[in-house]
Amino acid sequence: MADLILHDVGLRDGLQIERSVVPTATKVAWAAQLITSGIDMIQLGSFVHREKVPQMADTDEVFAVFRGAPVPPVLTGLVLNEKGLERALACGVSYVCMGVSASETHSTKNTGMTIAEAQQRIVATALAAKAAGASVQVSVQSAFGCGFEGEVPEARVLDIVRRFVDAGLHVVSLADTAGHATPDRVERLFTAVRAIDPAVECACHFHDTYGLGLANCAAAMRVGVKYYEAAFAGIGGCPFTKVSAGNVCTDDLLHMWHRMGLRTDIAIAPILAVSQGAADVLGRPLPGHVYKTGPLS
Image (cartoon, rainbow, N blue to C red; front, side, top):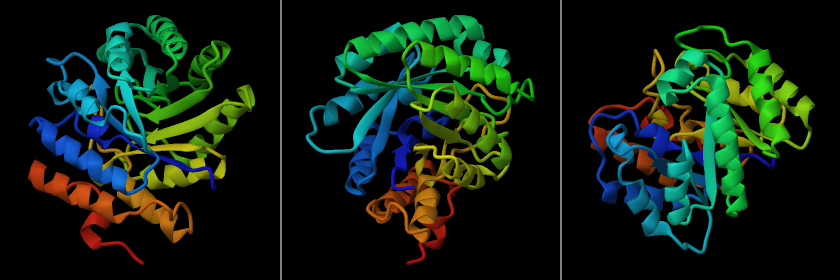
């Protein structure tokens, strides 16, 4: 439990689906406030096509503000291909995230490629990132189900993981893009991943589409998952899935940990302030709970 790592992805996965573009200065202010919490990792944005995902058009500018910062947290960026990696490395990004969907339909909608084509490209890109000195996390998206296809065979997910591990990629995330995960399946699938190679460091990325986000995080904790991706105020969602819903809420997950006596070194107040600010800027109540109720001491 002491090895739990909290990775806020609100500035990327949280904002990518929003119709209104959040100003760069606001993103920078939110990132600076998150940093004061002592959180482990913050995903500042994604290096994707600026016109297709206008919310991420200023990712290079956001990273430029924090480039060379001498203190934690780790600042991460999402890349989808070689061109995105070039931009990330030019911005000095030291930790890159990339993934492959286990759903053929989602893969085609998200990348225009089949699973096999996407994995070949992502593995090559990941190895190029490592060769350039960056740390790399690879993910299996739609690992617990697909809004278009429904059930995703666990064997297919594990085949993708094996390909990653065989290529020497050992930080592996299972992403519940469609929010179909259940605690029993979370435990089973992550246990199977660890059986492939005990040296794999597991990460999880859950969406709260059907209200099971925190329950799935608790299940991941039981089987030794290390990295937890979440978004302030529970915002976000994949624009390329059938039913889009927010991420597990960073504030709520951290509040649960605090109530369990875990990761009390991360301050919750700055994260709650970001969540309230996001609700104000976006002009609506957001899915998170604790920023509305206040934390229990």
